[in-house]
Amino acid sequence: MKAIVCTKYGPPGELQLQEIENPVPKDNEALVKVNASSLNAADLEIMKGVFVNRIAAPLRPMHKILGTDIAGQIIEVGTKVKQFQPGDEIWGDLSFPLGSGAFAEYVCVPEDALRLKPASMTFEEAAAIPTAGVVALQNLLAKRPIQPGQKVLINGAGGSVGTFAVQIAKHFGAEVTGVDRREKLEMLRLIGADHVIDYNQVDFTKNGQHYDLILDIVVQRWIFDYKRALTREGIVVMVGGSMTRVFLNVLLGKMMTSKKKIGLGAWKPNKKEDLNFLKELFEADKIKPVIDRYYPLSDVPEAFRYLEEGLAKGKIVITLENNIPYCRTWFIEPCG
Image (tube, rainbow, N blue to C red; front, side, top):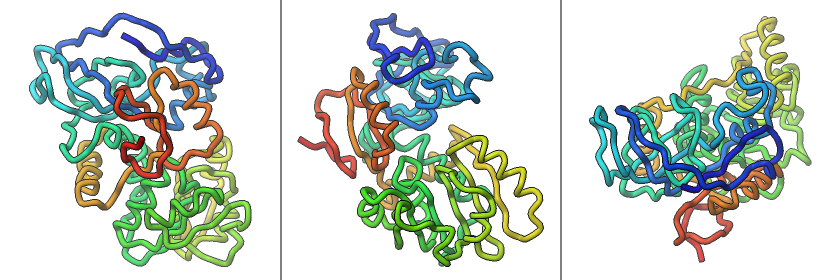
């Protein structure tokens, strides 16, 4: 089979398209033909060998085939697999317990990491949701439920996690402000943001507005800036960005005496109830994956280069099907 192989840390040019042996499922695994996958910031960090990843694997990536989001069809099942059979269309997140492996034609997956794909969801839509959608959902609700009418600001709203966060926060009745570069603001309005801010023009911590929840996906500010932009009992949840700044903010936050809180984002992959909730929102037309570009498997290095630039609106999808050409679109609709 063909796979994108990462044998050492480095830029996207280090990734190689190779022909390797087809995997064989263990007793508790299913062999999946991958129809689509998608890129996440975590894939980029693993490829480049960001510090946290080098703790566990100092010299080379722990898994040579990257990619966690998966949608495809089951080809074969192990003797102990009870939930699936050959021909089932599935989606899921390989982060736990497998680690990765989606950027390939086939992958063996423990059955607990897979879910049946809804018939109304395309493979490309299914591949765009598991990681980014779950990260957005879990961190919006990490500290307390969102109440209707609360003011929620999402910094980095135009990326993969942010576009889901905007739609999920709107579902819970929040008044949502999305912060990103100018080129992404119209898209944010289209998916439901009540207000948009161009971070090159306005500093949301100095514009006089106060928010009940700030979900920061890029984390380029200090706790004192956040404090200025929060309501009396407001919360900041930090999901990405500089890990040094994140941890220092958390430490400084423990010294805060006010009711304003700052916390580190969390992510528990493959929580059945979270994926089911996202499926229900999708089927009710409450969320829709925002896709900027599709790339074939052979162009995964180019897809990573585009991800590095920070220009993508929402998700970047890798398709192994020939019926969807390379294109750019805000919403995941096959285009010609």
